[in-house]
Length: 299
Image (cartoon, rainbow, N blue to C red; front, side):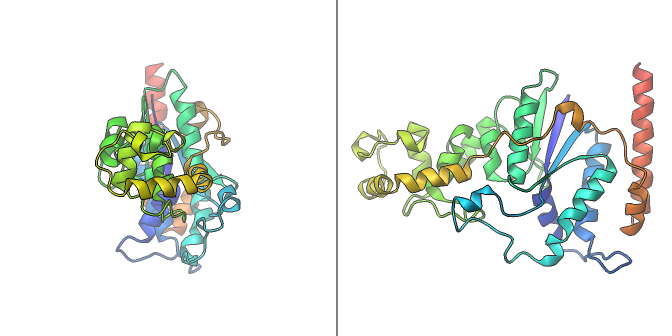
């Protein structure tokens, strides 16, 4: 069994920013990005996906905003995009796909939680997290891989090491040092990606990096004395950043059996009519019939 976990927030942003005309429903509501994401998920099902969960940021803010005042918010996001989040969630549910609409936590936390649940299920052979988001690199390893659906690139644990210079378990530490502009925290001054990777490749976690650069055991680090002083003075700050970068794995996501696609709800064709995509409903109905027939044949 293969489980597919989809970053719905990323997909909605990607489709909204795609260089193509938008699409409005009969009431004049912009629905183009939602239609594109739903079509993409249908394609995934047609290609053989059986157990699928989609995570979204129903509310952009999360518990992390209480920890760091500069953490990302919904400010500056086009209202036409924000309005499509609840719309996407409802249409995916009508499609029959499991949706994790996050409020206190973030979509990435739901993906991390579902990856943990799926990896722990002995029936699951592979867990595919569908997003290029670097935060999710910390979940990769064993059964779990990342897939960038746009490029078709699959990243395993070795791929994370090649890309960032550190193993998956060190991704939160790496982000804490270098910062994450997308999430709104700056990291420590002077700590760039290559330097952080070199030091963490030796010590793995920020807590284990000695204050004395002579004890780092990493030759050739430019400005090591200055970087060490910055780290020593910013231990509390970098600890906060690491919390921000560490994904939660205790979100309520259910079980693998809950994520099995069993066909659409009766109202899915109505949504497709609203989106001007009646053929999509026909495709989904045919797929549901084929799945049902396949199940009868195998029994």
